Image (tube, rainbow, N blue to C red; front, side, top):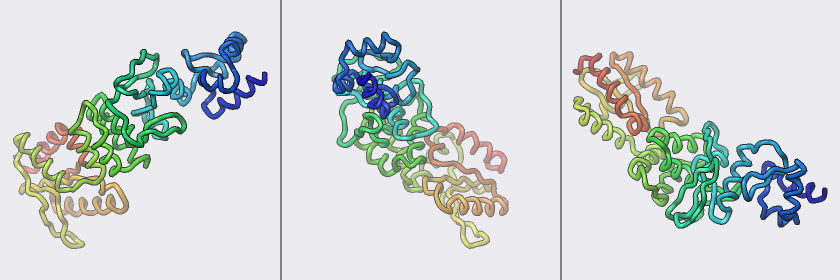
Length: 301
């Protein structure tokens, strides 16, 4: 029973699971493990993972299992799973994602998605609560592995919103963590999140209008407001205004200022549409459709 007590105490910090290597270091060999399993005290979950209980594994325990079963010398939690281990809330995935070097030969593991990466980058790994990549690296890789641009943008935005990393760190990480997909899209979104120049968003919007065959608007139009001059991002002579919000519009008093400015413009007789930069990246068709509808309503088509 001394073995059982030592193992139970050691597993308490790992959500009730231990690897066979860890058990060996505690003096628990294969035969002892087999006796505990046969007695109904423990349960194995693969070739390397032993639970010191017989209940199902928690999400956190599954993270450890994934790394051990793939190979703890080569595998680390990565992508959305690493973000969850870092504390990200609001993302659910039925699989555990790990990364291994592209030269590794690994067998499939039930419930685990194994991603091969060309190279590890300096400082990308941390060890708590399980071997995993840092939030910035995990977010960039998750975006490359996402099933759509919309999902990729979500994986980039949420870690910054929940303060696991910063937009500036994402932007720097995107330069060194290179995936096989979205090589142009991801840096653009990272620049948007980091608070890229507002003028860039306006230029992108003007290009979107040209590609859709819409009249190109005037940029940085000055209007008189109750508190002085108001600078509008884009405006058509018919009175349709489009405001493009970068990352800086999300903090401090910026939302309040934006609301007051929009109200003043609306009360002055213009029709105002508001988009953020991510909408231009992820939902361009919907942006164009709403602008077209706005131009028609304002008499600009």
